[in-house]
Image (cartoon, rainbow, N blue to C red; front, side, top):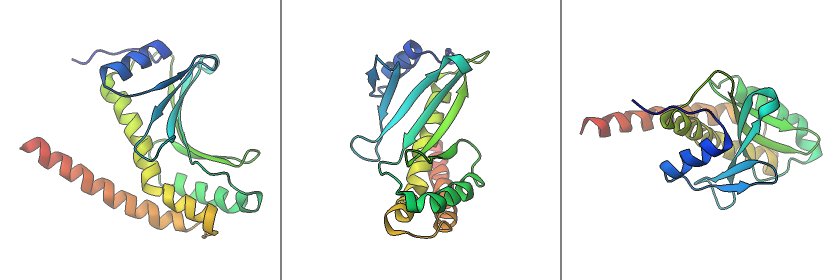
Amino acid sequence: MAKSFKLGLEQLKSFCDRNDVQYLENEKLGQLGIPTPLGQGIMIRIIPHTDRNMLTLALPIPIQVAPGLIQEVARATSLANSGLFMGAWVLNHAKGELYFRISLPLKGVSFDDEAMLFALNVIVGTVRGVGDAFLNIIREGAPAETIVEAMSQASVNAEDDSKSEEKEKKK
């Protein structure tokens, strides 16, 4: 049986060490950053909100949304979120920041390594699946509906990945 743990910063650092997950710590902010395979400097931010008994895992898109595109990107986030089972795309209108986040409870819940790896994979997989469509909207002015096609294709890719994993387990 897998050992479970509370989602404190020290426990998360131990999780990373046990699973060979690289991380950077910002002691001043009390946050961790986990590099992703999506590009140099693109990190999942682990942000404890102990006052709210929540932990946020967030992966920002590394480009600022221009003020003239805020409404179209907001519409795209709404379209994307309507097809998600876990997490949400969030647009900070004031800063022009777009990111995907998952919030996890801290109170009355324990996690194990498998659950944390799953959460991290959901974040990377979701951003990998539709991040380029968001970038096309932000950089090229593509319509928000671009997200619908990207979500559809990401779903097909996820199913293919799942089938490949099952075949690999059977070997």
